[in-house]
Every structure is written in C-alpha cells, then in structure tokens.
Image (cartoon, rainbow, N blue to C red; front, top):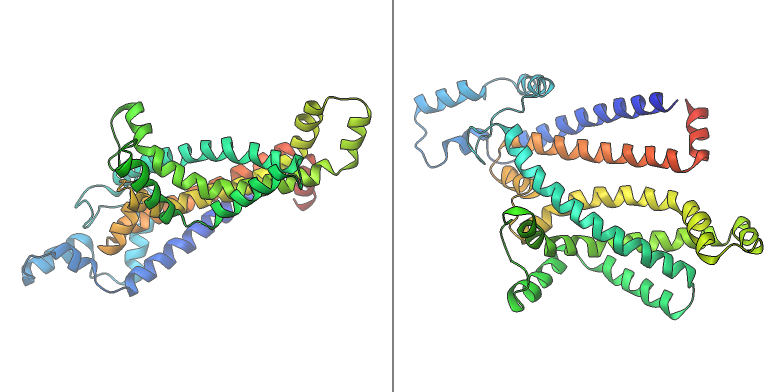
Length: 320
C-alpha cells in the first residue's frame, strides 16, 4: 500500500521534473542573449572561434536535439559543463558545492523555526483570547508581513555593521565560524517562516483542545501536561507537519534573496548568476536539483503524515 503510494508519487514527480526542465529550456532559448555570446565574452568573434565553440558545445544543433542531448546526459548523471559561471567546470560539482551551503542555511533556519514556532503556537492556542495569545498572534502577523530581504538588510546593518556581533559576509571555516556566519541569514529566514508555523500550530491546538476526547481525558483526572502533550499535541501534529512541508519549500526558494543580501555562495546566488550569464547547463541543473528537493520534501511530509495519523493510511488504501 505505502510502496504503491511512494512509487506513484515518484512517477508523478519525474514527469513534473521533465516538464519543468523542458519549460525552463524553452524560456532560456527565448530569452535575450545566447550561450555563444556568453562563451565569446569580450573576445573578437572570429569565424574560426565561433565555429570551434559551436562544434564543442553543439550550439548549431536543433533545439530539440540540444534538449535531448542534455536529458540523456542527466540520465547518466552528467549535467554537462558550465559555460560562463565557472567555465568548463562540471555542473554536478558546482551544484554539490553550492547546495551544501544552502542546505546548511536551510537546516539552521529550520531548527530556529521549530524551536520558536511550535512552542509559541501551542502557548497561544492554550491561552486563547488572553494577553499572551494576542501578543503572540500580533508578533506572528508582523513577522509574516515583513519581507525577508528587508528584514535581512535590517539585521545586517544592526547586528553586523553597527553592533559588530556577527560577520557581514563570507562563510567562515570550521563549525563555529560557519554557525556565526550563517546566524543572521538563518534568523532572517526563520523570522518570516516561524510566523506561519505559529499561526498553524495555534489553529491546530485550538481545534484539538475543543475535542471531546480532551474533555474526557481531563475528567479522568489526567495531569494538564499529559493531556496537552499526549492527546492535544499528538492530534495537532498532522496539520503542523503539513504546514512544515510548505515552510521547507518556502525556505528553499527564499534563500535566493537571503544569499544575495549576505553574499553567500549558495544555490540561489548560483542560479541568479547563471540566468544573468545565460549559462544554460547550470540553470537547468540548478532548477532540476531545486525541483527534486521540493518533490522529495513533499513526499517525506506525506509519509510522516501517514505515520502520524491512521486515518490518512486508510484514505491511501482506499485510493490505491
């Protein structure tokens, strides 16, 4: 049952990636500038050089032939060579180097989101209508409303330039320095997204604590903490986990702006540079990696939902 569900989702994910890669390939072909111009740079376009570059990178081939050659290479785990961002370097190597930093930033931000979002959301749900609930809800609204790149610039100026508590650029060497360099970007990323998790957790807790089984648990004389953790939190977990999947996807896409503000050499910065320089292999590879990350994140969230709530397992079984 679960295996069929996973295979079905993976098949749909592969079709989605194929469609996405073809659309991006079409858009790059329609965009101003050509890969040949990026390869020539400031060099004079002599006929010999143009012929040599066209033959080396197969730029004279028809559009569909170029896409088919790229797709065949991807199936063999060969993403091609970078044209302009890091000339002649393997795209797979560039992506692995940049993706590592982006994953570290996203993981750091996710830890902050979980540490802040779930406890505050639970507290607001338990103290519904009270001063604590109003203060947390207002803070979450402000956090959601603040654009991530604006918040990043404010944090950079206050804590990096004015107070000098954190470095303002670079990635650092070693674990401690890396954490120090990624703190401000992670806080900027987490502040906006934790506001979403606070509101989702609060709504889920309000629904859970109003159920009859919570009343019965209290009438049985169970402690407040046990009722809260074992019954209320467990039943509120499914919508929270579902929203967490969306937050993870948003974190991946938001890193593009955050990496630009803090000059971090992650996948977002790489993608922007590749689009600017019309580096088709790098753009195709980055889009494919980000798309696969989103699909696998959603699949992991769905599997976690199946593990948490038996009702979803029955729904999957009926649909299989």
